[in-house]
Length: 70
Image (tube, rainbow, N blue to C red; front, side, top):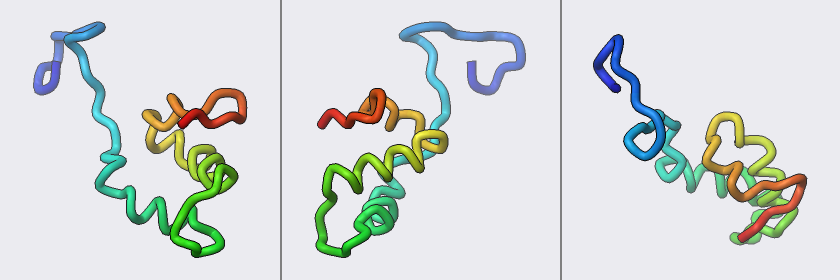
């Protein structure tokens, strides 16, 4: 439990701190938009997820063995 040194939570009552993906979304989008056409192709999305999934583990839900599910 946040703020405690010896209380832990598992399952639905637990949470982990993750980098704020939405706060950086515009920056990630602009970086991923390699051809600067204002939209992301499937290849650009896959590259963005592959590059950033360690920083933003919540992206992993969209990546599965090299395929992106939207």
